Image 1: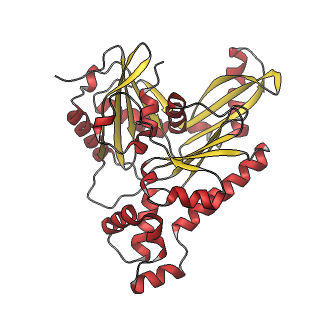
Image 2: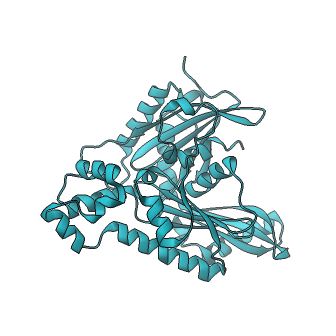
Image 3: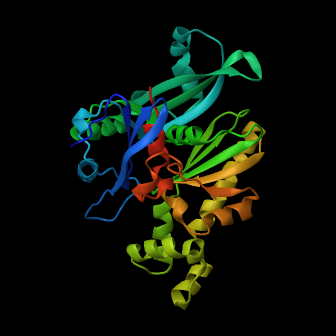
Length: 352
């Protein structure tokens, strides 16, 4: 029997540059249950390049994963996928209240002020989040944008895989949706989510009394492995294994001439910490807020041993690895690394 996505089922499909992940959820009285979930690496003949979109290899990975999960793309009735990376932008703004028609006409002007856009190659959308708590005469507006090229590539992958394209979300919004389905925001203070993928890390700040903030940090799991391979003269596969086994300690030597050299050179781990520090300072300056009460580390990079404690020590904030599959009915027996499914779960949880 092939699952096709009954009316009470939603398939969340996360098509990355390193792997494809899928979560099929069904809903009974609004309580979600994971029916199937899986991941398939996008394999190619050459080395992995974070900025390169590999159409043939990506299509093969999607098809193999659907075959493994016994999901017929042509029968999926509710599909939610996502876009992310440097070709997407997102920012929450405050605007005077106006009708939908007036807002739509002023959207491009507003977006040009707040998002890096190329008018000839940009798709813009928005969502009204509600009343501004500081000024009832104004509204909170979430602006999002992507390039036509990126959206077209994504749509092509879906169609050539046999899907009928459905809702397309932004990756950071899917991550937040996943979190909000499993937890509540604290009454006071901010929550920082660091979603570490292969090509980059999504820096997402949210809170009851704070604007949604997002920045893509261009350092992810691949860059850690690649740096370790170069610093210690290792094959990339061995560097990946060493990173998974030793975590942050792998960047502080381990004996031998290569390790001594690594101690003298700046590592990607140090660059990553500096990027986090700069982004935190920028956010505090822009928003006037810095009362972080929790940092959630998720994504494939959350598997790096010692990283949560290192971040907690550096920034004096509690840091925990967050598994969005934990506690979801049906997910316990799947044997998957839950943190890497953060945005995929959020996509599957979206019902509209």
